[in-house]
Length: 486
Image 1: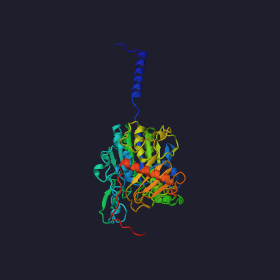
Image 2: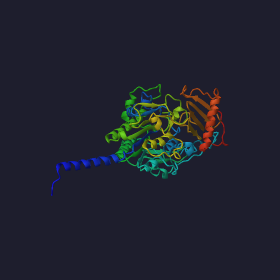
Image 3: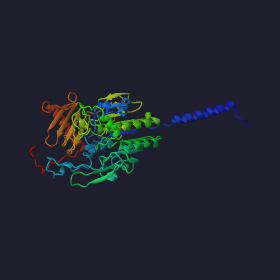
């Protein structure tokens, strides 16, 4: 048998190589991975790139330097459960009728309901399984999905993440916080005096001295490693910096030696240490992406679910805090890093809101939009690409409930609208209007409702039309109300 001539062998080798290259080129590139990095109760200026000179967040700052930072991003609510439900569904909390932190229903009825002019409106206590969550939408597109950390959009186990499109659920349950940020992560809570105590452990295992933020980060890193060969969606929802304020001692001690920022209200070392641990989590995630060769094919979204707790931090430069609907209660940090698309250190002043994340994620990864599902959000892709504006004039909030007195200046039933630079808050108790020009008065110090009645009336009518369109639940008059003199 004759041996192939050298020339013939070379040609055959070249043909095989070209065939392999052609086959590789025919393979579509892997869809971008998605990480939503959600922090609980993080205030607007609780990170350095949003203005703090006390809290240290170098890794989050670096994310902003490689992505787009939004100055006018809003949470869908001033409380956690409504915002989280809207993130998962793309729907306004008022449309979902999930308007309060679960399960605080009846919080103001403890005194027999005599203390409030309106009855606290009933609301949905479990995110309906009929909703197509962002996780379920991504699974159809071939994504592995994980929910790691706080869940808090249900009151029953049958509505946990594993029943809402997530392959993995670590630490997610129906509780709004962890009782301890250190192992064994024991929680004990009751709605009010006389109500039964509820006890739980946020995670079933761990090691002595283990810190929850670090543990959730390690679980997230493992998930990335296990799914590096396929597109994944990681919903990393930290319990920090929600109360109780538990910090790692060595970090806290360093802040105790640091001059506080009294002007901006950033003065608490333990709270600062919790923020730094969250920042270290971001650093670990980004390091893992880089080491795995995934950094340039992973979209990272950093956000908070509402404003900072008023007894722990200041939402400088804004008025208000978690628990009310002034800017400090609902304006939050938002950073989107989309490799190859977002320009370095880009900043957008476009008003955006939590519901926009659902359609934005679908749009960014090339999956079909689902307008019947995420009907209250719009894709931010034109803004992220700096190629256009959003076809939307107003943002809306509706809160037909009462917030407990654990927060300064707690909200009473209200609706609110931001229309361009104007913001109106309408009290549902007595119809009182507050009108602010955010362009000239971002601290909401000057109520212009009386001096600009035309604008106030116009925005009030827009609110009324919107409420009717989405069929909100309204509070009812409380016949048991007994007004007391202050």
